[in-house]
Image 1 (cartoon, rainbow, N blue to C red):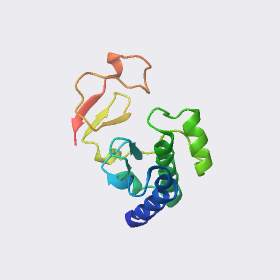
Image 2: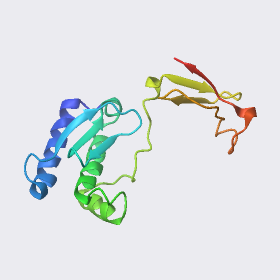
Image 3: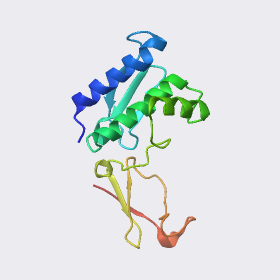
Image 4: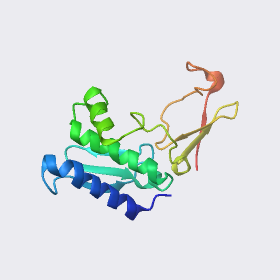
Length: 153
């Protein structure tokens, strides 16, 4: 839904507007990554903000803008701030209106492992399951009666 070129233009504009005056021009950069379960990332070591290529294709422009504001707030707050009061204050000042973490859809159709419990609930994994697991929708604790059977797509 959001065009990659437009996302890049917004990200570069937010970096120039909010990060360049604090850290210096050209210190922070933007890029796309291949994440399938998170929308954005603020990498303090590389001073790079990234957005999931897979998920950005599903989000509308307003959602992408909020993701970018979220990550810029992380860059301004610093690595130790997490989603605490300092980050929240900065995020609000930038105009961020979302929650503290992405809890929307994931790129589940890209997950190579699909499992089903006896009740038919579907579960996906991006990494090969290494141990037995049971369905959390059917039982709060591990239960062999609700064992998930995994298969590779």
